Image (cartoon, rainbow, N blue to C red; front, side, top):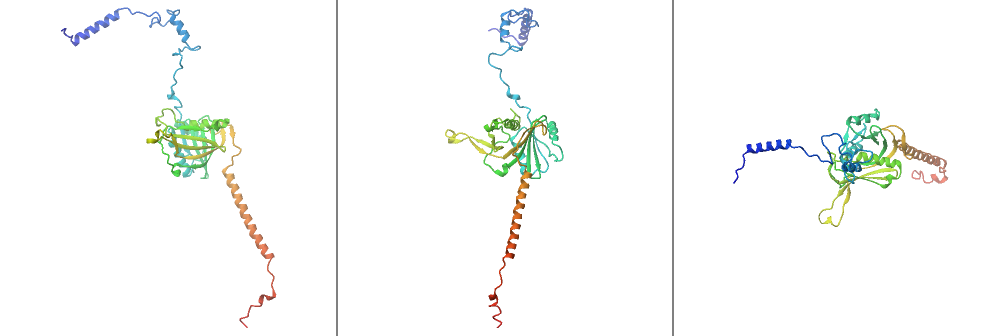
Length: 340
């Protein structure tokens, strides 16, 4: 048997082979040319160059990789979308809990301190800029009973002002639906959102606010609930449903089902501005009645009812005074009979 060379001999033979390969001239492919050369004059008239010109995209220097279009990398789709959620001072517990419930549905949301009602709304834009947010969700509460929701794209706009109606929190509803926190939701919009331009703008604002960025570090990598937006009576109706998968023997017979998890709210769009919290008015709902006007009308109705009640009492008294019973000669017949 031939003896195996030792480690020193193997290293020595390897070094000799490297020196011999370095001394031999390197063959150059005529189709490509010299790699070290910066000029393409050597193979400008060759077959390779003609094929390269055919594959080159007109107007650019890029060569398409086959006939199929290049694959789109979705890892940076709406990656920088962040939403700032804050409220004004004087918010009631209902709207404060509603804001917290919405934050559990938005993984890319950031909260900030309460804003004083005396400050201008432009402070929200500065706060969003400091927190690196591209959108803002501002709950403006007035008189501890009225709530207005602002959806703004910072810092250039547009912005939408809603009146929050029929708000119900998760703790109040106690629904049977239960999904994971910060799981990626699917958004469902009614076909009515595509009928008019201002509805399409509202739809896009809701998508940029509630859509979870692709591969967000807080989001779960699967879908288990659905955010539904409906348009009815010139209002946006919001519902949150859990996607329930069948288990056991019902897998083959039944499909997916939806169970409401909450919260619930209704948004009445009032105005749409071209800028963030300011600018030209793009849309205004003329049918909207301010809550202050509605309360004033109710008070006027109460005053009118009270006035009618007082007037009715006065008329009754006047009727009694004008129609008193006249005296009769026989009224004193049975009086004083015991004294006799």
